[in-house]
Image (cartoon, rainbow over all chains, first blue to last red; front, side, top):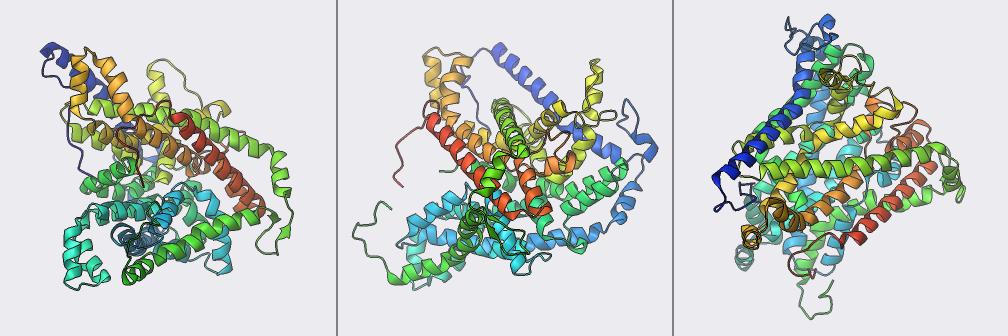
Length: 292
Length: 303
């Protein structure tokens, strides 16, 4: 899981200087135009979010709002209880981080470092569940939670987290723990350390990066999550940001400047988190692709 | 599984601890994954609105499906999306990764820029793109107007709505790009040197070194992309409500409506099982034909 470092596609020690320049210039031109294409939607949305209602509908669009209407943000964010939505989203994220890191790391530890009968069979099942699309368990789960009377509460979103519902995290922890040296573990065992003590004192302190990757993943998934919260959180007081934005989108359909302000507000925490924790975002994704 | 009968003394205490540590996962698997999968098969043979007791109908739901034009429409839309969007995502993602893998300055900045859209919540992206794709005031049609093209009503015309969602999905290729980049950087430089000695040019190096070496990653992305395509929901739900004229009626949207708007749990379960089988068959086909183009380095793994 090393961070991405630079390495040349071609060894060019013998290549002519002119040749290198030409390819690099072309690559730069494509990358710069690509960046502009990728950035334009942001520019357009942020600019719309700062326009007056009258300035939004102009063609060709003006990218620099005049006047800059900062008041759109307080207006949009007080039109609905976005503070409550924000708190609910954080609450769910924290609950899921606690449940999932605890249950998935313990399972990953057992799969990676303990020897027991049935280990390979069960791990094979973990890998199989990675392939199951959300649709297949959607309805029976809903019926289960509805019979338990949990629909309308946070429980259907939180409780499965404590039961390692994310097979990918079990897999991620297991792979990371596999790379940890056996000597340290054997030494601790000889010193009479219990298995849970081993996990707490040796494994966890040495596996902080993988915990960080998983925590970032959970925060991002939780911010992104839409279908399941929509099914289970029927009461507006329990809405997450994604649900709140969807409601806002319905009620302020024609007030594009406010709608864009609300969207920017919803993406902003993730954008900030991304810039500060980019390393962990990247490690997580890279690990997903290079499993084996 | 291989070493099951190999005489190896397993400590009882260690086994007991292991079973305790995995017990949350085992319980979770039974309650929230394995159990529900079987339950959904049983439910698919019934008519059930949750409130009243289920009525056994045998294969009734599956027969209904055969005469449900919206089922075929949603299957068509989702398959079409998967067939077009997934290869496009692979080509664009790989292309950007190849550019970034040349010894170029500002690689970190570019990587951040291309990856950022992929981490954004899908509901925000959908809300934002509904505006960007707007016929009269949108960014896309403004861009087209620079070339004298009068852009269509992307989300209001049946023939343009699905292409618009495919176009939008390309904004999120950053995650794939990172994976290809990691794969590209794992290719030993010796291989390129050897290719060079054999007189290979840039294209030949790409065709005979890069592409085979990266093919397992492409296969992985193909399968992941396929499964993701069949889970597309928020985009049509928020941007088009499946319209116009059901041209963006994605499979999960159709399933969602049957389950949570019409409360036809039996029929929706049948839909989910058909989808499950469909994805399983497609995945098997991909793996079956992957032997022809996927190259694995090194030995066959034993476990």
